[in-house]
Length: 118
Image (cartoon, rainbow, N blue to C red; front, side, top):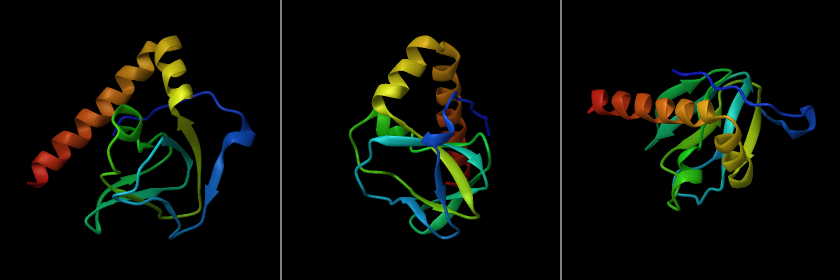
């Protein structure tokens, strides 16, 4: 899976304990996350569909469409993530066009993986 890097300040990061939910399927969302440390499971209908490691991105669809979350994200291990809200996402896309391509690649890889499962 494509790894993404973003500039961040240490104070922006959030920590999650194993088993703690970052977000749940069906919730509204306005934030995506980039994993800095540890790992996070993405679950659809209660089944793990992806394990994200440092550099992994989750929740990006919330910034692209106003629809409920399509997955649940749960910390597999102690983990640290950087939240990215809509304003920051827009700035990253404007100032680092490669970031937008990275996000599109992540989404394309996920779509292909889901298609393969079906």
